[in-house]
Length: 281
Image 1: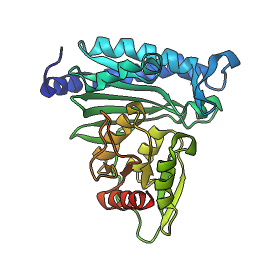
Image 2 (image 1 turned 60 degrees about the vertical axis):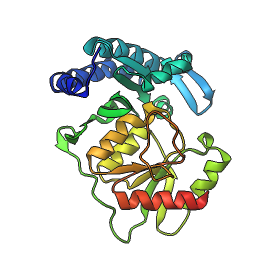
Image 3 (image 1 turned 120 degrees about the horizontal axis):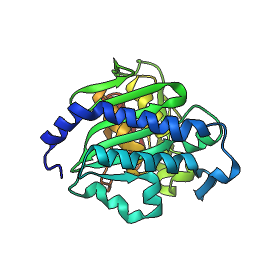
């Protein structure tokens, strides 16, 4: 078993490209052949009509689980579909082993509808700290990567989130109302104010990429599932952005966060959004 971050850094230096290759193969073999070709029996509901799972989700996660564990012996995988089948498996995020956090198809609803707004998300964490991430939008031919302390990149080009343009409304992607409690809905009302242009989010991974690219300013998300956030949070951080919960602390992938939370292009924007969320609550 890997027993130090330094050793994991050595692994990443040698094998980060192998992880990227595995993600591309998972998409090429299990996801893209089903895009816009899904049969009715290949789509199921999990917790309601907006929470879908397809054969592409299941098979891509199984493929990635096998490859990633082989690449890093002693590691474990926390994947969205495996956790749905066995919720106790989520606890591995808090364990001692390096953990791969996998969302095989982030934006399944868009995938089912034939839209391009979906991606595969993989992050590597250890001891609750995010070390590397991969975000692949195969229908858009975009691949973003990040490594702790080494920057964020989209198709080989360095990403810089920058700061919002003065005088322009902040572009903030927010949780879908179906995934918010009454208290969280009330907090999100705080964004309905001058100078802010909130809108419902699409794929969480692509929303984080938009922030890292400077195309969007912030998020306001009300759920903690690490597979939706881990890859994107590191991408935003390494592009110069930040993330905060309503207590003013960074979001923790291990849970226990005060929700909703924000990820933003810069610290000032993050503090402003958190203040609005706290005021709404």
